Amino acid sequence: MSQKTSVTDRVVAAGFAAGWKLVPLLPQRATAGAFSLLADRVWRRRGRSVRRLESNLARVTGLDPDSRELRELSRAGMRSYFRYFHEVFRLPSMRREDIVRRTHVTGAEHIHDTVAAGRGVVLALPHMGNWDQAGAWLVGVGHPFATVAERLKPESLFRRYVAFREGLGMEVLPLTGGDGHNFGTLATRVRRGGVVCLPAERDLTKSGIEVRFFGSATKVPAGPPLLAVQTGAALLPATVYFHGDDWGIDIHEEIPVPEEGTRQEKVAIVAQRLTDVFEKGISEHPEDWHMLQRLWLEDLAR
Image 1 (cartoon, rainbow, N blue to C red):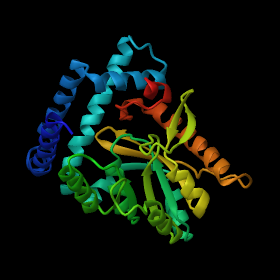
Image 2: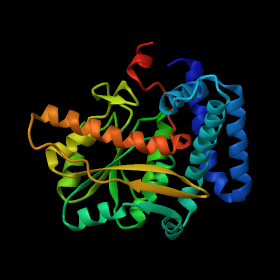
Image 3: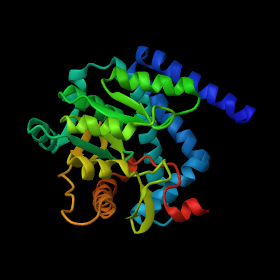
């Protein structure tokens, strides 16, 4: 790691620490406005992350990469992205009953009924809206769950993020650097009738499943479909978005596992079916899809 990168990491970590400490003490309207202004400032600079967001949104929407419509959509996307971080700093101080009350959910019965029947649930989500808030809602309605977190740098920031999520009631397993038994732990949770929540449209392991996503090839994590195939847990796609000043969650019907075929064939089919549902949810709320990284294989190859 270069000295510049190390300094940047420490600055980011200090910023997050300050955010969790100070933002809840200030008026909500003022801090929300400040984050929106910051989002606009980053958007106007049109740096690498904003250009990547626009490239991804152009694929999703079919908008001309040079169009005013795409620029306005990316502006809304950056405001949505910065709203996520603003809310992350406020979530620990919010009352759980307020989080539940302000969350507008369709399909919650898919979780409740499955768990009540003694069967485990794997909730799979794209990087949309405020997934931490969605997790707080899930805990608030009686379903504590396990998840896996990308290992952020520096380590101090990763530890703070883990502490933040554990404070909301989640069990957090590190994607890397743990005991190496994440899949076994998650399988145990769902076999006992519990709930697991996993991000599922961006592969961080380099061992993902290739699928077609908005007409082009990409790879998605193997974990969610593999858990469904191997354990018999119900794989439920969920799309998360902002609903005015509140939040929306659509929990879709279970992704069926084919009865015939090898394990590899079943996982591939389930992964594609899951991705198809994500396409629909992202198309309905493209401004809340926070994908500022390369995703499609042809982009990664460049």
